[in-house]
Length: 316
Image (cartoon, rainbow, N blue to C red; front, side, top):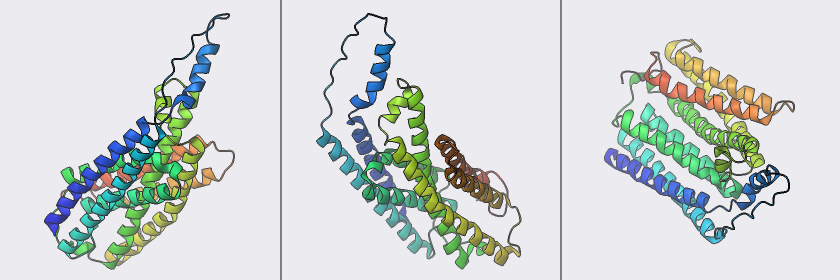
């Protein structure tokens, strides 16, 4: 079962790579003529008075059927990768005879599976969100590659400190919230690119923005995902405190991982509060979402691998 789990992870990554190529093809087949119109208009206005600008070179619009086909392939390839990744977790759990999120390697697999599942649900419900699939696949591949190459751990029993029912509750909810936050982070970055493209219509940000959903769509999905994940993250922090009291005799000790979990909670609470305040600009709230995800990644990598503490994986 352990060997099958390792093989399924490789297959899942190949499926994500195929999905990434399909999503990229869908982006390349997007008709960007309308989105380039503001830049062309600005060039006309900037021309010398009395000059008649040459007409823009006509470019054939991409066939929408080819783009729809690429989008469908990307959606199904991502779904196949998610099913394969779920099989990877299941077989690893059977091999270790426990829940398959007892170390950093397994947690990253569970986190990315939650992220991809969250994107698939939103993409099926709202087709306008499907262009985010490319960026979700990129982040997922990077995290899975790091997990397989740098923090791989052979399947085996848990250390005594982790052999608790709270492992099923605390870590599973933390992985679920982290995965949904990942998709929210992708939407936040996309919204910031969209905002930047409005001030530089002929810059690199405008080129990226041409392949992204509209700004209001990105802002809406960003808020909905964070509003869904924040209560789950809150419960994960509370469950961790209860587990700490059962294991170490105190609910909170400002261990590095506890501290950074609290920092992430504060940042995401600040995001939701700012989002509910009409006077706060939406670009400011998007930056708060980005900072929140960066604190999550610092907690996952730096605290686990570099900082010594009760939760640390350093030296494992």
